Every structure is written in structure tokens, then in C-alpha cells.
Length: 461
Image (cartoon, rainbow, N blue to C red; front, top):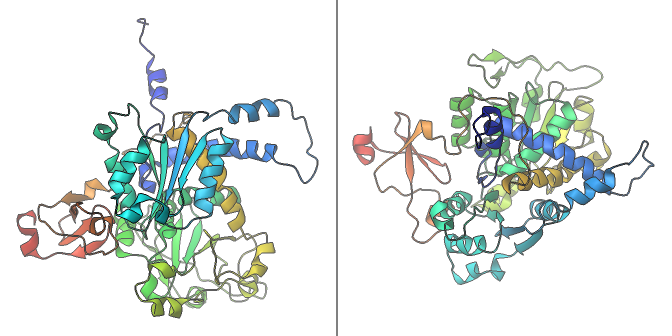
């Protein structure tokens, strides 16, 4: 082999990295990359558990454990993580900070927007440029949809040329839009509890309109071949743009129900569209029996519950009316399968009874704990401290914005969503995209869709 040249296999392995990448959406990671994150998280989880005080004496030799923990504790030495949170957070912020500390890195934080220059009117783009000069990776949570994309676009190659390094942006939740790292935790929990994701029947329950965790999770579940059942009040169903993307990209049509009772009706034939299948098939009947009563979860492998997102409602009266619509308590436990996983991204308010906590099917505290190894893996990969192992080949990796199905239009149309970052960041122009050959346009930042007249679209139609 010619000196200085690497073999094709080594060259391929050298590119198998996430170093310097932004994670704005769950679509910024391919399925193979997500599986690689899970494998690395397994290793970190084992190390974290070994470092903890055991409740019972462990069997076997602990030879090599001390060395492994020491190595892990130096993995990100000299690196700085910035957690920039313009909304309250417990699990996301603290798990990211814990993850960085466990790998020997350091953390700087904005935990309250009133303590930052945002209170003086500073633009988000300016804030991100400044913080990028102080940190090596940034986790951003913001109340406006599309804020994470703006941050990633701000820290482009031209902006970072003066720094001489890349500074990845991780979306810690942008308004009611997405929360990709929570989805990693959710999928990881399902994988560990159920042993697989493909083919699982998962019910998404609660406020599906405003819950960003549900939006990202719906995409993730569909991509891995799970079947979705959505249980919510009619006014709080999945946003149209989420359902459109599920159908167009994964041929996944979630079955929608108004209540657990609708799902459990023995004589109901609800159409179910498995992910990856173009032809719908009839779902099996949920037949009650003496053991399960009305088997609301007999065919459910997991129930994912979300709280009513009161802070997202423009009309608080509507939020109060929806509160307590779906309650998981002892009665539900008697009706679901013995191995049905009950999940919740937390915090809970009044949708899950405390009596459920002691049940082995309740996974929400494990789900929260997995945030540390999952985010350790993600940070280490984005900083280039670890590389992905072998990932299965995928034809045409995912794109965060679905560019293949949307094209920018030339009109000066502004996004109608009042909480979109384009309506809250001074000087930021809206960017609308037309979907296929339809008269529907989508905001490139918040993905909200709106009908558009032929006159406004002009020649683009």
C-alpha cells in the first residue's frame, strides 16, 4: 500500500463519527447512529452503576473497574459544556451536567433567562455567538419553536472560523416543537424493557398537541417500525405537520382515539397502519376477559403519558378543562398487560397516581435515570472523544428539515405561529417552504403548516 494512504476500511471507519454535529431534531441522527449511541450508553451505564454504592454485594471480580472509572473520569477533561436554559428544567439540565462531570469535563450554565442579557433584549443569535467562545458544546432550551435551528445556523462554519473549532448545539427542547435527546432516553427505555422497538404497539396519551417529547418520539417510533395509537381529546391531537411527516416519510398513520374506552371497545375495528407498511390492516379486537377486565392495554406494549402542557395554552380555561382527562391509576393497572411499560417524560402533575410507582411496569424513574448514560454517550460522540462502532448501512440518511419534500418559496410570507422564533427574534426573516405540489406551506423553523393562496404562491405552483 502506498505510504501515507489508509485502507478503504480504515478510511470508512475514520468517518464513522458524530464529532462537531448539531442535534436539533431526532432526524439529525440516522437509525444506525441512534443504535450506536445506545451501545455506548450501555457501556457508560455499566460504569456508572459500578461507581455507585451497591445495595447488595456484587458477585464476581471487580478487576479492572477502578481503571475503567479513572479513564471515564478523564474522557472530557479540559472540555466545557454550556447549558443555556430559557425555560425551567430539572431532568434535562441536571442529567447533561451530571454526564459532563462524570466524564471529567466542566459546566457553565444559564439557568434563568432573567440572569442573562436576554433580559436586556439581547438577540438569541448574539448570545449563542458569545457562548460559543466560552464552551465546547452547548445545550439550549428555549420557549420559541425553531430556536435550536437558529442557534445551529448561527454557529456555522463562517461564524466559527475565528474560533478554529466546531461547537455543537444540542436541542434541549424548543417550545412545543421537538426534544430529541428525550426521545433517545425514551427509545432506550423501550429497548431495555421490551428488548426491541420494531413491532411494538405504543399508546401516546395526553396532550399530544403541545408535548414536544411526543412529537420527537412519534418520529423515532415510526422510524424503528413501532405502531402508534394516540389517545387524546380532539383539541389536543398530534399536530397536522407531525401526522403529515409520519405518513409521507414512513407510511405511518397513527390510530386516534378519544379515550381509553374507545380503544378498549370489544366490537370496534380501528384501522391500524404499521410503520413501513403502505396498506392499512384492521387492528385485532381488544377482547375483555376475567383477568384483564376491559383490556385497555391488552395489545399495548407501552403507554407513554404526558401532562397537560398548561404553559403552552393561549387559553388557560381550555387547559384547566383538559386537566385530568387521562389518569393512570390502580384501575388501569388491573386492565393492562403484565409486561406493559408505563412511561412518562416527567414532571407529572395529576395524570399518574403515586400508587403506580411501586409497580414494576412503571418505568418513568428508570427513564429519567437513563438520561445520564445517554447524554454521556452523546456528548462524548459530539466532542469526538468516542466514535461509533459499526452501524448498519442505510440508504439515504434522514435530514432534519425533510428538504426532499419541501422547497423554499420566494414570497415574503411570515410564519403565522406567534411562538415561532421568526416572530420573536429581531431581524430574523421567516423562511417558508412549499410541500410538494400542494398549496400548503411549512415554516422551516417551527414546521407549522398553513394553507397558502395561489396568488401568494404565484409561479411556484
